[in-house]
Length: 453
Image (cartoon, rainbow, N blue to C red):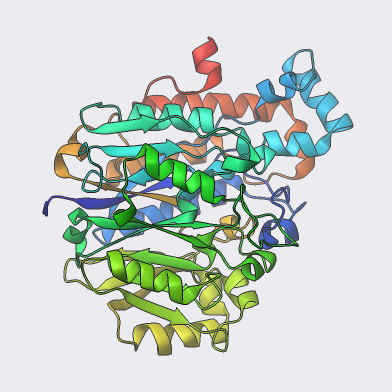
């Protein structure tokens, strides 16, 4: 075990075009709040506040920049011509849903950015990344190329980091990243992330098979995609478990596994409707783990699927503390729901498990679009040497937090309604902000407008 390994949570900075377009079919919160007026400045500051509070509590915290939005290149690829103002005006008139899609700030949910294997598990001793293709929805399909450039700019040393091709953007290899991937390992305490781990890949459907799947909402992750990523990263059968998500949960609005389960170290916190075959999933994990699995099961009698989805109890961050205990970071909606809050107190904090503390964070701007604390971060276990080779200024400290806060206050609007997305000035404001951000973070040119200049 390397005692220098720490898990870094890389949170996504909320982009300047954060809006409520209701684009994500199967994401109940996103569909419910579609058309409301958003507050991009508040959203970005809420995210930065969460990052700062966890940094001050001693957790390693990083940042990932947002995407270039609106994506005018995508609109031009779809036949809209003319200068920027003409493209925006025509899209607003002829295809308003397309305009909303190319303005989406969905990259804030960096749990979907990629799947990551730490060096402790990889046969070549490097950290491996595969950016997710996100092909199941158009507004997220636009992200992977920029995501891959950003990850390559940040994790740039080939001696320590390996970047794999995005999987083919077809339904058979539909990949939603780390939102459907959980790494469990033997260690307790922060240093435990350096122990060899077991990778739980959860999929919604099998593309080349006849397994029963959801009927109301789409299954966004395929078994074939998860298996391909495991092969890319060199993971063996002894290091992997592939489990199907419960189709009934998907149809209830559990569009990703991280809406119904979260794991850390040897702990797996999950709802009893998380997996199609709960017993087989737990047995497979126990057979591969070198330390006893600690399952923390929340029964439907305690928390209904509806409450799980509306409060995002399981879309919480489960973080290791140096003494071996764990902290659960939940959205404010959990505290507002009496049943869920009582379950947290009675089952989690009073139960036989390492969870000893609950922190409540206000991320309402994200929650209304269907993303809780766990959606907002990509977990990357890094040794001291790997952290030292990171490109740019991407690990949060007081100075960077202050600079990012000032950047948001300079460039972000405090009100953004759907009709504002056609404003050419918004597009220019966004480019100006992102150009400054890449300089502030020191990651170089990663956006299309910078590469085309």
